[in-house]
Image (cartoon, rainbow, N blue to C red; front, side):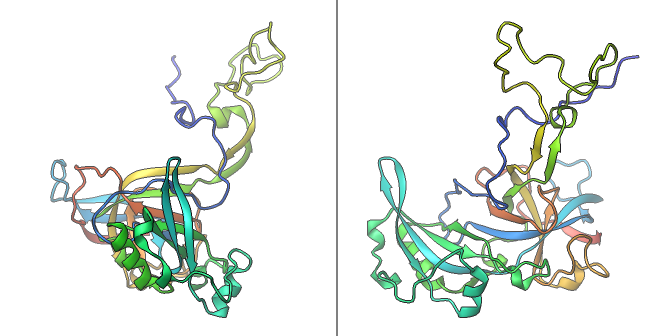
Length: 326
């Protein structure tokens, strides 16, 4: 009887599979839009659930009917704009030039620890910056995990691009430096997102789980779960990198395009379970419901950006959610 087919584990698109340097990813490309607003946000992964919605997809066979779909919840506390970074255009790409940091209260500086040293007197102020000298201007933001119940106080610091022209970007940055940004100022229901996250780390695993090597069915003299060959006999001193070996698995930076933002829920009671979510706790800030799964374990920071290549088949309006099943 033939064995049932099993796809190989892992994609050759990502090779070599390099582990991430930090828990939250770095974003290198942003969508080009004319609207003047931040192009990204961040949230902490709560967990997965099911939602009963009215299918609003135009070409769906279940259009107008109630269907059950998987969703992922993200808690999105407001982020603090702690600085503005200006970039110059060079023959080798963008180069960071002037950086202006906001004045922050002592309590928040304690949370930052040694992550960012803010001098008492800065040589450059936001009023002295001339936007016509730069090619683009980005926001330097910090998360506020203290507002959540995950048990962490150390903020994550990253850049967020701004849409519009350089003059409009500078005006927006000047008006919002030192202030908080909420999820509603960046995204709206029904919008498509690109999700950037670091996957679960699974530790050291063997070649069967790590690369999908088939188990040996017979004549397994030494092992059943190892690769069949390490390479040529003539050049046995060198083993090719493609040979499946045991090693660390997971903890990779991955991007998923065109995730559907179903709901921005401001009433925490509607998305909080009795006793809190498993492995997470109680939701204390606005949460978003995203269609499908998202990489990473609970409590991990997930970065969200405006979709760079939106899918035309996904409706621009959010569907009607009848019920949330946790």
